[in-house]
Length: 255
Ligand code: 48F
Picture (spheres, helix red, strand yellow):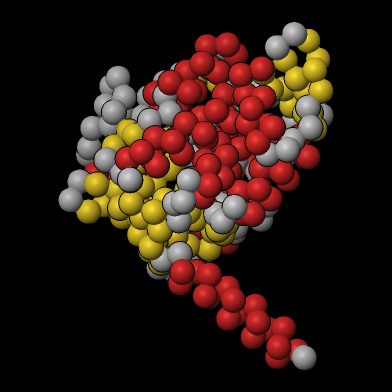
């Protein structure tokens, strides 16, 4: 019995990893925008793998605000909540409150239910850069990264990559730092996030969701980080709609 348990896990994990060595879309970061993107991409027929460095996907959504585990979602994004079957309570005209644990669990469950494969405990340390195009991800175990162990990575190839790493926009920064290239932003560089301005930030999160270099798209807070826009705090409509938009843009581009 001991051997069945171990062999079953090893066989099915490595089958899963092997099946995802080449995918249509590789997503870095399992926050709300990455999970929503994974869901709509898989629904649209794309082969999707999402890589999250932490044990639990969900990013900054679990904790609500200051660990009060409720978030706010505005009217525009209620369609996304309904798509995921997420309960929401009207608070004021145009604004709803949502239990953040319920919402995060639902995003994770439905993304994987429709076919996106989620790899947790996996850190992305670089991209594959072929002929001036982002063509995949350089992956390693998150503890290797955290402990700064000198261990070489493995590689996932993909037609498109999404930087959904949140405030740090790590993938865009790494691409720019290492390759001396010009990004599709006002300065050609990662401009960095500004301070908090809710309404502006929610609008620009969606506007800034785009392909910033051939093969590399940004979503969620990384969009505003890359394009020098504002943060917004615990309102999540922009994150949900950004995930949906990036999925639609990629589906159109890889068809
Ligand atoms: O930060 P995060 O939740 O990104 P998001 O989807 O949502 C932002 C909101 O949570 C919140 C906000 C909304 O009002 O402002 O902050 O834009 O999730 C990003 C995820 O990416 C993971 C990180 O652990 C987190 O779960 N991540 C970051 N860098 C890497 C990574 C990396 N290099 N490799 C793997 N995962």
